[in-house]
Length: 320
Image (cartoon, rainbow, N blue to C red; front, side, top):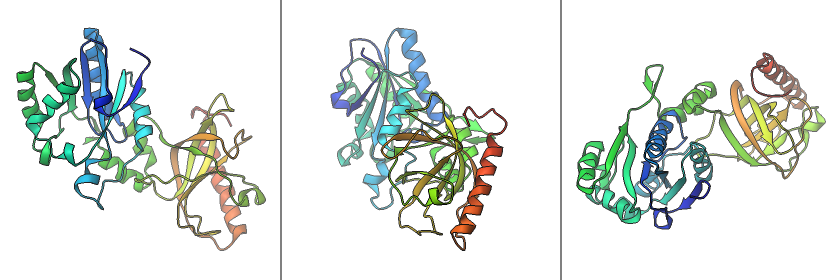
């Protein structure tokens, strides 16, 4: 097997003649509950000297089944695949979800998988996994169908935090409320924004706070406001501490589209055209309109001090 691969569609999946253990799910966010399912497949495959893979879907089934009311997703297909590959699987298969797949009867689902993946020996899903037309299939029916095909079906229990099950839906709600610390606890890694720095109006430079501007607008958006962040990219061996504003910039522009503006707390090695990753660590305050640029500048200075205080313990894994 070559290094971990991202495959577009199950029809393109070609694996060596070794037992294949497949984790299946939407996996939006790749949170701790999702990781438990994927790690079950990885460990099972290693125990048998087999291969592990993930089958996920794009777009979300709701985009096909209820257009106009699609579930807003936490990340795009590329980011999700990259996070899944980090869990040690041999491949991630991103299957296009379309009306034909939506119409597939639950009784046809496992034969469809086996037809495309002849080496398949085991399927790993979460305990609340549903499949088939109208979501009529559940884990118990999958177990029964698997017996007839010689497939093992493993169900992973939901992961709880503070007495509540971790779910993508709950994470979306926490993100919209600015509860990024709670979001990170459920993801198992810092919430991230990835993008290429674009040119801006350079207003930040005129008031002493130059920023890196990212035209970043995820479907499931965080609360508009100011955050303590960690920034990485080529040009720095370690992540750098920063303070970021995500929103519409009502004082200076009141833009139609949100933008992420990041001020690095120290020397900044990045500029226009560079690709950076911003990890969100703590919510500092909501975005608001100020009377003028001078008042905005005074507040940005306070935001910078708040971020410095957050990173002041020296335990944040960043350089300042």
